[in-house]
Image (cartoon, rainbow, N blue to C red; front, side):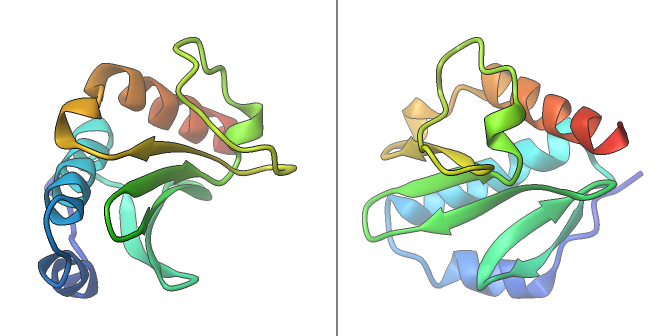
Amino acid sequence: MHPIKDPQVDEFIEGLESPTQEIAAQLRTLVFEAYPEMDEGFKWSKPSYAKEGLVCYMETAKSHVNFGFYRGAELRDESNLLEGDGKKMRHVRLNRTDEIHADELKLLIWDAVELNRR
């Protein structure tokens, strides 16, 4: 199955500046590597991904991207990547593309989808 990418997210990423553009583009690729059938769209003005419920999102700032998980407080975060202290959401702050640990982030994505299936 090929990913169905939302053209709004294409435009959003194209409008970003370096380094956030490269970080966001790599995160998007990573999400679809984890689940090619992930639903991509915009929720609360940010790229958002869902599979059997909300999974993750990208929130961009001038010089970093927060890759967040809607149910992050419930995830097994064995690599201690997640930040935040809200009731549900957690995020990984990424300042450079070399901070993207694909294997660890995919584990979080898979775990988040598994939570939605319960």
